[in-house]
Length: 230
Length: 148
Image (cartoon, rainbow over the protein chains, first blue to last red):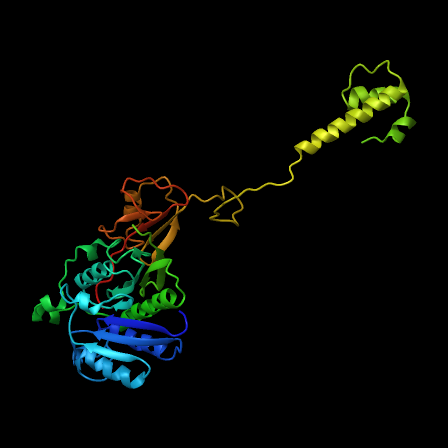
């Protein structure tokens, strides 16, 4: 990262992972004098009392707008924007642009596929995606520079993302949304932390040899993988 | 190596013995002392040159070795193991020569390998009947976390 770098950060999904992640990334960017940053928060969901055990908000309401208010008051050097919407095939090209650094912290593979496929059409983009089950999870780094993949896209080694069996949030019924599987705060926290590692290595150090990291809290293990671009 | 001075101190019979027994020079049994000395000296020089041309002054080589039990007192210490991982779980297992499908069955509980996991060997997708070699790196691809 050179002096006076301008970074355009986009965080999609402000649930258990994203609500932790946006705070950590903002703190880092706000106090790094080398960068001028804009931060765009995207989520169509609202923070409710049922989210309290895992998600880090101080007010109820739309997650993107609520978080934007919090971060703007804490981190004055960052211009923060909120978009109260979900990502889908129609909107993705207006939300993610050339040279963006995108953090993807959504709760479905269909959104991951849409965002990964869109990033593949750009020349320069960094996409960092994370997801988890109850006690384990992973994070992936997709880097494109000058129209070439430097690391594999999100689908390359993950057929479950390439052909997702799940739905976008706005395709789900109320019942499906209510009956979502339980998650552990510490697992969300670990994914957010590993996404910060990938960001630091890729953006600050230009190091992206290891582009996928797995962890398992129950066995207290972590393994990072070198993936070949297909 | 004999010097000329050393050889001159020796008797003719001793010089003939050097020629025949130590240096393997034949046809010297009736030669004079000065001829014997000249022959021994020239033979020594020729041998020295030959030796010099055969001397290895520099070797470039790469040696690789993997030890599973470097401190073991007995047995073959060379590795026949394969690095096997699935997600965050990994280990070195003595499964060289076995098929990927066999290893999957053998380690499915240890590494929590699901039937849907696709196998990669040294980063490349392989079939289940692929035979593993020592030093291979086998990964069973674990599905990405779906929640957030």
